[in-house]
Image (cartoon, rainbow over the protein chains, first blue to last red):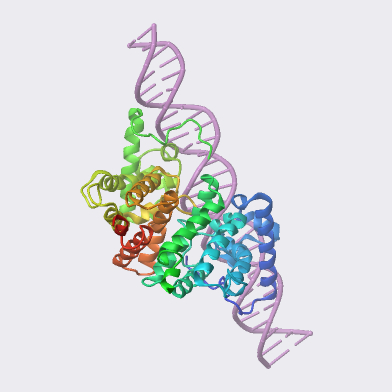
Length: 208
Length: 208
DNA sequence: CTCATAAGCGGACTGCGGTCCGTTTTATTC
DNA sequence: GAATAAAACGGACCGCAGTCCGCTTATGAG
């Protein structure tokens, strides 16, 4: 995992050479196309390179590894979701009471995985989700804020990890596909979990 | 993932040819040695085959894939743990109240991962833990029984999944190693989670 | 416009997981 | 103790992720 000189993070506003930008776009498009056409599990890095008309080294220079490419792919579609819970309309976005936003967040996450859960799962490092990735961090930070706002006391950071653990793509996919559980059941279980954490009936008892 | 004729499960009491048994032992020993000497991440299947003095095909016939070998390795040390919570002395084993056994189970799981967490993590299929594996199923079944005994109502199966999700090797290792959280903190967070699920103060309020 | 330099590029190459199939060993039956 | 069928064996082989390094191209200065 020694990085040498190349990019990868591209956090926001760094400049990028014209050809590099073009190639990233080409690669992302090519990858998205292959995923749509043949599924995540049948995507090879050589395929992506060939479909984009670039060399294999370029793919790895841009995305580091297969998981990195998947992350980039997942983050593209996930950007909308992030916006929705950061600044969109309630109950997912700000404006609704915290307990309700928590419920909405779970439901939205579960529904989202129906669409691109397989990509998100593939974005994990070998041996599970990549808990250190910025996206995951953002999710947990969001949960922490909501928990605090809901009046929850104690180790909010680990509480957020516990909540996020249930929303992990691999687990949700297993429950949904292998075990055949309907989304409604998963959402209900999420709500119960949140209620338990926020202290009884939705935490609203704390307001009395 | 098409199995052809070979073994793999060896669930309990099926007979096994002499040479097969001998080779399995050789392979497991060789693998354990390599793990001890060079770490899980530096174990290759060729190494194991060579160290055991058998062909590579034999390794795969026995264990299916790398994750399967890791599972077998993890299950060896995990057997003791299973016995401990199934039939050992309280509070981990039967004899103590359910809420106390739940606490003990979390603490024991967290402490166990200190020792062979990396092997357990490597035992997961690509893209996270192998939720379908018998060992995982046993853990969840155990949790369901304890939750029911603690008087918890509702979707116990998913509640067990939620609890187990926090004990997943990849997550615990991340918290412990990358984030530097002490085990005591993880255990405390587990206890809080359990208390929330069992309905307030350890669920003991339900007995009133 | 030209040049210098850094960034980017590409494809041959390596190592590992996993498969295939002809050969060998074990267990069973007579 | 053959003969036979089933199971196991082993290592050549394949495909893919990831690396390496000599070549190309964009960019900014003079």
